[in-house]
Length: 428
Image (cartoon, rainbow, N blue to C red; front, side, top):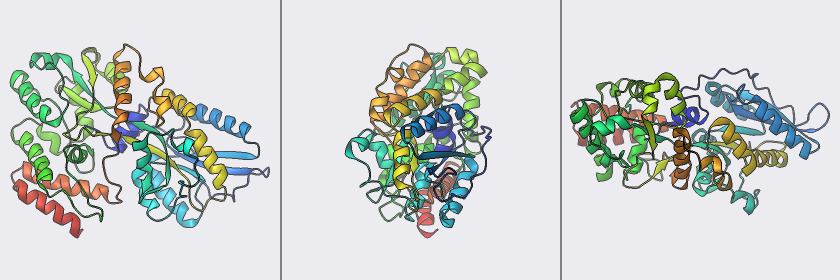
């Protein structure tokens, strides 16, 4: 059960816990100055998303190392607030003033890739360099068979669970699948009067439920971008969530409150499980020490497919850069095994390279956080971006969630709800 990129992907990634409310001291991006620094050196302008001031020292050191190893190249780092990045990069690419290397998530990067905004990388990256990245993660930076982005840092959620509540309910192990979750949810409610978990159906919030369609074997969109979920598999997912709600196995506020409520309920001991990043155990220890003492981590809940979701950040290079070689060299430097491992440790994230993931940091340790981190790293073998690359994916989420709510509230039958959702998407 994963959090969407904005809430769980990035925020759990950086240990900022689901809000992206980090303060930023960054200057506003300026127009590319023609690729030449004042000294006459080639200049690579590098934009990141809301990484200052927490990682200022890390990037200053990284950039210094690159410049020392590449005489004649100067890197100018500009950090952009999360909420501003899409509008700023859209404006910059349209005006021909885009930076040379940009940090984006694959969903938005894919939208611009469809407009031929990025440099195609397939013929520019040697095979040994490409093979260092996890294959399924590499796919998150491709569109129509063409590679447009280098994978950078990752997160995948785990299931944090209250061992006392599960024991009180007679549940020996946390559920691994949605099918098991339904059984466990009833057992916990019957034995303790509490809910097993909270997931939101607020359209503007988490994509967890939308991702569950893919995990349970449904296809969201076909190759032409048309609705493909009005099928027996898709109907089964609609029925699954509708039944849980009608059986009072989901809190009523799942229809009105977002993922923050899931955090509050877990920390209050009112739910038995929470889907989030492993580093959230630190937050629980601060906010609810008694709950932290009885908390442990298990793999992300999935469906019959066994698929697990991952949130990805990548680096892209605008097609019109006047420093393509230097930009690519810098992007490869930022995302190589050594530097990914260093950033993963500094930011409590996961690297997208295979060798970095084998480091003992991700495989050892007896503390609850160490074990949770190891579980999240192990999931990388199967993890992938589950939602299709589509510029209107948030609109699809709204349509599906609105119709799911209608079925849950008996305003529509499940058959009518899923048919209406598919029709609304195709006619939007």
